Length: 216
Image 1: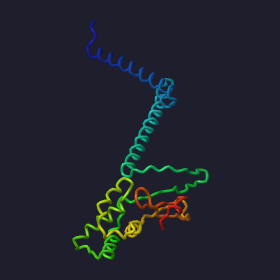
Image 2: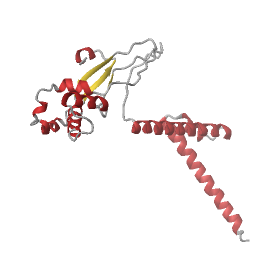
Image 3: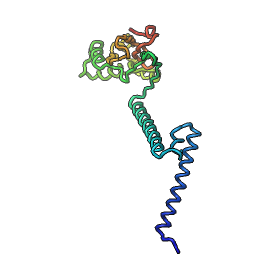
Image 4: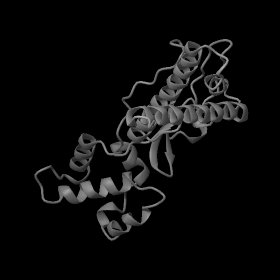
């Protein structure tokens, strides 16, 4: 008697399911032994109740989702503000000392200070044709860094800049620090110092050598 086609397909499906199930359980068990991850070994353990194996499976899924969430969050935070911070923490006393921080503005120039400086020094107002030229000069010297000092050369032939102390000019038009810095200890006094770096004039916090580098 020839078996009906539905029964034959059902038998083939059951056999395929059994083979796949055995292979998956064997793979998970071996993976648990090799990696030391208990949950993988328990999922493939046929001696456990199905609910126990489902429990271990849920733990694995939760762990994977947690890692994915943390990784995505950190990558998003780093893409928005590419800053790496490393600090030592005393977990026993729950003390987190503020590390030394150096902050440099992307745009160092304070526009209002620059306008006032241009008017006082060269008697040039915002409406004058030369105002843009003097603004370019101030922008060039205050944004000067180790990589673009050569940009100042184009102003070298202008006699009106001969008697200027560029260091004093930078201090006069530099953007003031207005951000608020907080520490774990509200009573801790945060020391801020203005220093000249290879990235121009910057601000240093909680640094032991800031007193030697300060321009104030």
